[in-house]
Image (cartoon, rainbow, N blue to C red):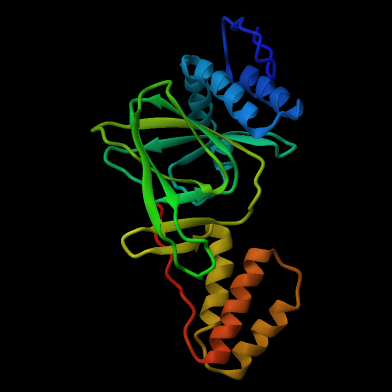
Length: 268
């Protein structure tokens, strides 16, 4: 059996399933290696898992025959996302993405490092380099740094924030599946979408958070004292930094007599 975290070990497990993968991957993280080592060793483990079909068939069968289990899937920013595993200590999560023919996500960054594997059919990945320093609100300038086709069992990695900007596209006429493993989040609550043709960047939120954001932004468009009072009261409460930012933007919009942005692009 492969021993996670030991680069000199070459023996491969004859059967890799999801439970074994999760155990080995967690052991790799517990060894407290640096990120390059985690990504190098982690991609070996994922490559091995991608060569097996039994574990995926078993998991999908459970989801489709147990509606209570399916209902445990939490809404996320990505409607094509299926949660396969979240470790209880928050150290990593494993997700499947189901890509319909011709589908493409918006260029985006990540709040954690990630290991991405093509599982069913090939998929295209474009990576981008950010050229500006991020100090101008809503502005971003990108250039494409890589464009490749991932064949089944081929792996790509992303790093957090501006070092992990990319876009995925199913260039086939059939469904594709990727299996993604992400580490502990270094930036919680939102992702950023990039629009190179407009040199623009926008924060986007998962569905539940977005409802709160919409309420705050709506108050930012109302020119009434009560709207400002509600925002001021809300700002005195404990809230995540990213929600506080939206609250402050709405207050600023009221005070300056301008509207806060309200549109959030769909992910697919």
